[in-house]
Image 1: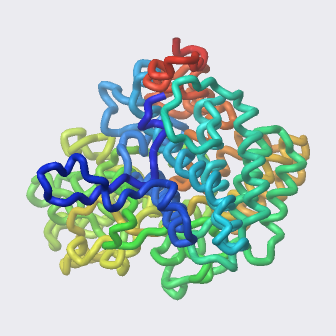
Image 2 (image 1 turned 180 degrees about the vertical axis):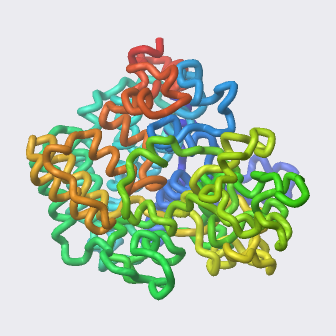
Length: 568
């Protein structure tokens, strides 16, 4: 493989030279290498912090944006609305998802970077006797977690991949693929060890890898290994731990304002354990104007460009935007371009009445018209309910696909929090009569983001119960989630893997990387074919696994790195 794919050192050499004319012969006064820069606890902590930064870059989209969005769309959840007609990128799945495509390469490289840096820590910290044992064990547990998490995601997406567990100090070109089962088995080993070393969630700072998140990811790995009893035991260890629980009642900064507990889970500054949230198992940290962190780009991609939709104003006959000057408004969402549009399956087919995850606090399905004069008969009317949407002609949209669809609020702050999450320049002093204040443009918002919540642990345990054929206990776990959402109970007879996947859509939309879940279960082709109007037209069964990137194969010159079937 390319040296810069699997060999990514944590520290770059820095030389300081004198100004003599023969400076090329001078010995550098300071060179940082793993040998001298990984010696004390602070240096190892800095190396572990780098793993958090690399993982945050994936979760916040601080990478190639097409690659990041590719973890969500071309699934049963969403399609690419910017390349709709003619279909391009993953909307044209068969033509695009090939070994040379940059999306599988970008994800592969990002995950192996974490693995390489984890290996450096794992292999060196065990000999760092000057670090107290408790601290050494905790740092080792964190590095093992990140390695296992990355290998698990690789195995879910690509199947078997090369297993490298050692520190690399020179390039290797002789990799072969371990089987998918072998990769999962290594993940199990790492996570079992990590869980024994890590500290409980209520004893670590916010955003720190802990025992419960290791047990949660272990649950998923054990399901992949078809060790359903082990998965049930691992999930139960998390669920029964007294330091975590589902948030059943209103909480946090806006608990006394209109809303519901599901919206509370995603309000700014509500995600962390120190703020009273007992459901988040690992929260990706971010802070505005912190050079070590980055804001989340997801809202920009998923929110439609609704302010630009126009109606024919009744008095003048002029076409006018539904929001004044085509501006986004703070009570509805952050700015968006409609890059990803949710499928009809997600927006309209999976919901039952009164499910708070689909409430107006979480998914906005109608908007008041304020882009017309205040004395217009159209002013203040509802765009959908009052029939305007049904009468709008295609020319009244900037883009008929991206212009208007229900607005997911999960990744947008509430009105009062735009200054804290995006800076004072984002929000104006101009008020909309119904929906807060008009916004200026901004790509990212700095809101903490879940890697996992306890709700998913229940759903994983339900999946394990289903694997054992025990639909009664699977239904019990799912109903814990549904009752919190005020949704009707599911019966054991309704439980199958498709029902669980739909429940994951309802509970975890825009949290889970949907393509990873579907590939893990071998359901990417089936669900895409049934529910995605674009990529579903050309996806084939072999696409249940992504291709091994062609660069990795061609540069692995001393052994054969096999390609997945269908891509040759």
